[in-house]
Image (tube, rainbow, N blue to C red; front, side):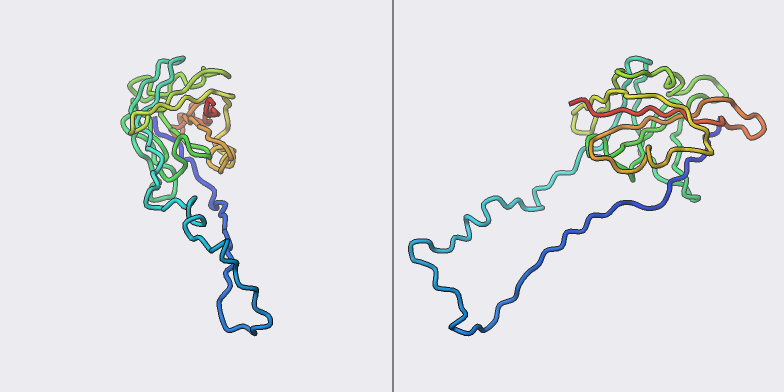
Length: 206
């Protein structure tokens, strides 16, 4: 089967931090603040004690595999981007799932998205049984550093592709969440695509 295109709505929230600074210059002696007492000298070490250099920042590890015990899924993850038309790339081959790399990394606040085919002309694909997932089922995401994140399914829904819930799938969230996406519903032989998408909504187990 050929994956139907999932288009993203343009736009993302941005947070701007404005920091005010005052310059130094000559002052009227009568308006100058009193000299600091010798008992309490200025101490730059105290002021900088909580500073953490950006050089020590460590990015969240990338996801490398997904396991869903309830439906027998155990797959490596390939990185997905967008195609020339702006649609989300689809994973190849059919037996492997893919992670939407321009989006959120699993474990970070936001919606991380993993996609997989439901089937092919040869038979079932990696997410063939995705529609069977129910509230409370576990999804495990393995990362490049060897750590494993455990997400818990909150709900599984079916959406017509013409009404794909872009906001719910790709837009930011305050907590780490996961979306699993595949095709489903009726198959339209005239165009060679399924008419709907199956989407699983899950949240990080805390």
